[in-house]
Image 1 (cartoon, rainbow, N blue to C red):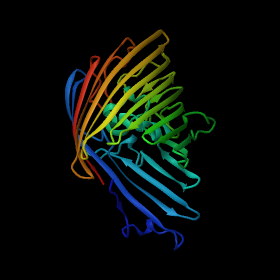
Image 2: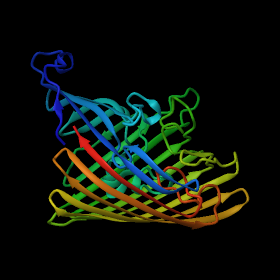
Image 3: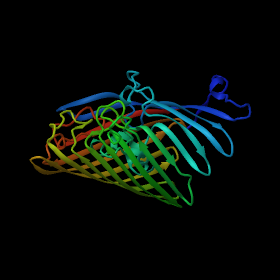
Image 4: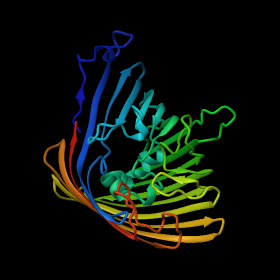
Length: 381
């Protein structure tokens, strides 16, 4: 991705307290704009202009200042927005995707504080099609494991280790910032990835307490997916890269949601106190193949099961989802692509579980089947 270095235009940002320090600020962004078709949204066909469904439309700046002994001060500000109406996404926050500052050392690693993505998104999501090439179009049902980078963590401190013998580790803690409620709406997460030649692997874990509609928590119903007493994600990924740069990946995630009270994708929320737990298991295989250096094809299949325990009994739902994308790179910065997903659901869980609902579709299907297609122009700057 080509990025523009803001030199001269922003002298206040590019100069530091000492005359000898080297510093830089980079402006970057991505605009993904296209047309979507949903075959069944609340019983109707839907044609929409949609921004950022495959790649999150955003702009941001990041920078660094050399300090001493290979130590640098770093920062990042990143904002999501909708091209069609100019409004901010991520709950309307000015820098809802990322807003953090920290220190980075080649020998000791990187420590950052603020709004940032958790280790499961950084190290595990790239093994999924949602986290690597198709975004929301191939996200797992109801965004249950955040594979598509649906939300970031507020009030967080994150450490990223240097890569040693192919291994990289991350750890994060997101504070609740609530007096008398240290554990309310907090997050902690850790992940590790390892690469040896053509083989890559990752393990990740995240635990969330709460997730209520609060402005002070590390995650909330405004920024996250679930509101519940607690949630935990356990993730694993494995991939193999061929000499021609084709990649095949396997991804697994297990998500426990205890005493859920809301989900940001449901139009009708569960009754208060009626849900004991939702347990998701997601199994995915995906691949990417370069037909030519500027033309590539991606595909993914995901099988998901949900065990739903309520005050009146236990039910099961199952999802089968197939997603495909064809991308042509007009230049290094500009691409056109077409992609689509088909989802089939069967089960007896009720709520909204038994209605197909591909993430970012025009609305949930009135049956267990749904298809969404998209054609889009993507430009990076």
